[in-house]
Length: 397
Image (cartoon, rainbow, N blue to C red):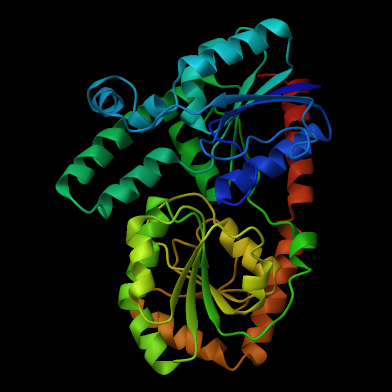
């Protein structure tokens, strides 16, 4: 089988949720089929090659376009396409895809997120079915962003963009050969929009073998992991630090709040001024931080998809405390393998319950690790993705 894998980002190094899902999916497909990987390379970062992506038969990096330029903002607000699509549309990518499609025929095209939908006319030239991997439901995530937007202008942008994304999603659900989503909740939601769409749930995961080797140290950290340039993580980091952390720090003055993730926004960097708060930036190997964590927190109030940060913490044997939205879409059981903070006042008692690192801590850590190993290991998920694509090719719509 020959697969063309098209992405709006470079997945190496896989240090964020979207990159992790893409990397492990590309690896699974590349180990089982002939994979051509076309992606936007990241400015200022080393472009991955055969050493980093050995499972790819062919690698075609394309320089990423500039995002949120004045012209693109105007087109995104006044034109027909939503701004997220406008941001990822470039002549360079059109030329690269046209050349790849002219050079060989593919059995299937995997478009990693609907951000690549502008290229579908080119991707369809060879006659191969086009399948989209939805990292989340973009219109839903945009509406959630609008509900907590910091200004009236941001709310207007979110409303306009969400409507255009909804229209695009409806069109793709009707036209594309198939769709892969992260959770059954998202699958059911999309089937409610387009009952005839072919949609498979392939959940997010963690590398159970990799995190099994997490070294244990003195546990004094409360750890929040995520890309700190992503608006949902920014809002979560700032909100938790300003509202919940002062009371937690007063009760446990020896603890440190660690905000770990790439490209921290100015609002996140400013949190370094708070007592016992650490902002790390990019962490090449997150396992030592997990090994020093009393708990991993997921204080998200907006966003979409399912959280790889929860699964990785569980795989590392660290109890997780999350908002209900943070744990959305995962087959978790509150009180068994996770603790849920319904409101700001819940964080202190939940973390205090884990502070002794006794029976509750151990039960949550062991149950979380069992859950990831049984259901959310990337190896099994990658096999499921490949088998899904084979089945779709054997039984075309």
